Length: 261
Image (cartoon, rainbow, N blue to C red; front, top):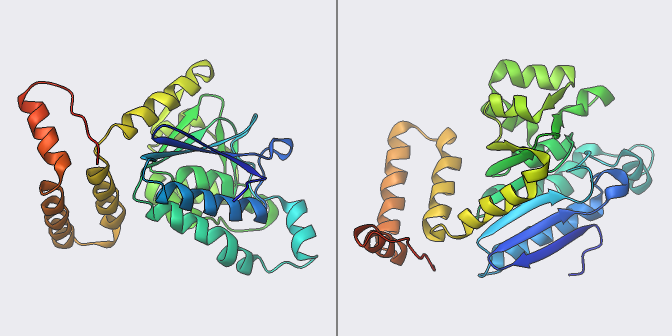
């Protein structure tokens, strides 16, 4: 598939997906959503890819839905629920279900659906100048792209309600203080920090990484007993995998492990 509204690059084990509508701060169109779904599918199916980095071209990560474009594409009275079901939700579900780690590299403002897309990643790293904005209330809408599910889990009920009801900017530094993102890096060091994080993940044992994601994403739906059972099943799988043998040998031989699976 040829992409028109994003850029897909693979450098070794790292696939970078770059939202590419910088003239509108990477506002989301239906075309972009379809391409993003295909790009994630490509990365998932490419055995050479071990980590996916999602970022934005230009000054912004993503300014949210392209409202002008949405009206043009769907008419004056768009069925926004249908748009979510058919275009947004498949991307969010695919991103969350991927067995490979997804890093959101938030290079600038992330608003509306763009904010929730960034926060849905397994690890979110931000430039210091970046910020998040739950802009929905400002135009009479509710948070979407998983926002109502995600925000209370990341920030707690009161902070989630405040972000959704007030529609105020949340700085990257504040998001870090609230435990919503993994790291915040000075703008001049941001690209290097993203590359280092992606490299670390690419060198990690892919078999175990996928099981870690599975266990953690399932945990809020399971009881303690059910989580213990899932841990037992996943640990059995990991213990039988070559990466465990390599990791153990490397530990005993006091060297860096070389995970290839």
